[in-house]
Length: 526
Image 1 (tube, rainbow, N blue to C red):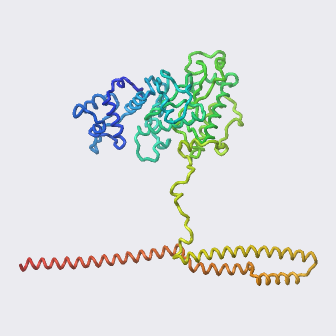
Image 2: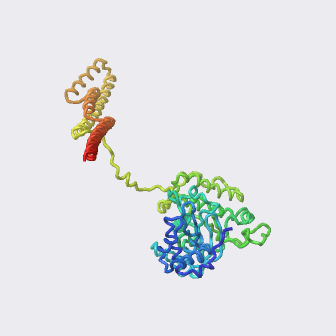
Image 3: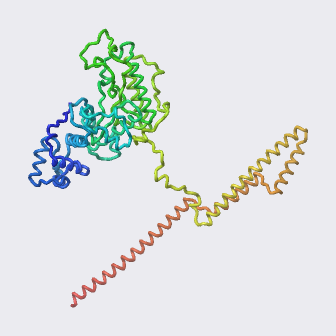
């Protein structure tokens, strides 16, 4: 079990110590180890020399707030901020702003975070309300002295080091500090929790966020779903299990329809509120006759969702796989206590769940699709064929060719309509018993009359179109020809420059040679 935060030294921290911790934090933005000279310069501490070194090595380093590191290969040494020092800075900011009064004991441990009990201050959750400009329900905000929860993120543990594969906190960076990743994870979880709470989903009320700490409301008498006794879930033909399964499916569908995928939706991240004390595994009381739901009010039972930093958009490339994992996890858990009907199981494909909201776009969740086009695509211009022509005359010729082809197409459609009329007349003539000679003569006369009046037949239109294309192709220069011309011009230019360079070198060599001869003659015959 990881070490808990000891606040014994917290009460005796001086203003100079806080300034040094913040100076090391600022220096770690672009330093792996911050030199002592830079720490003194940023902190503007009044102490100098040995007094300043004593404050670092005798007060901060022994208590685990700072660590002194040395790199023998590079000959470089300095100080770095530890996880405990980062927790101290976050807790100091929360206490100074009135969000928290005191820190209690540890109540939960995870692979990437530690959860502590705390006491709310005067303005717990009020500053967040003022920044958002929205009025929250006063009943949801805790009053002074109430118990709240603080979650400290701990990325980089031996149990969870593949952050680049599992999370997208680094945002494409090659290297990143673990403390900075903790800060990004805490910020993302606070934003996720805030929007889920505003949409009416059963999540804890978000109160404040600073560095790697997230302050949220405490769900009283809540028990993790994984710690509920199996006899409690199976009692009365699985009455409690049926209610919990219906609520879990509703939460999963509501999150998915609003554009998000939880990513870790299982019995370990679901809390049950409203259960009696004898329903959990930690209780020492034995159930009577296997019926433990007598003390449970099923109307007050409610599932509460926690743990949000891994949430992604439903448009993410791995969204379908992660959604199926969440669905299989919750269905597999309740399948142990219930006989699930296939009709009560949510669809396994995201395409079968219609989108009703856009929380992923509001949060800019990993994998979301931007609605507006990028500046690069918006600034692009469609290249027309006239841009590939040489000179304005060729462009005008191309426009004339386009107008001629459009007029020819209209003439072709008109002649096609005339042919349909001729065929209709031929059919009528056959019905009336006219001969084939009369039909051919009639069609021949109509074609001659059409040509004399200015109409064109399809064959005439094809001939004219071929001639026009031939004349237009003589004026148009293709892309390959333009590229070849540019290559020839570039090659010719390089050859000319090479010749000029050789001439200059020859002139310079002759001048230097003549000067050297003059100097040698003056030395000999002086």
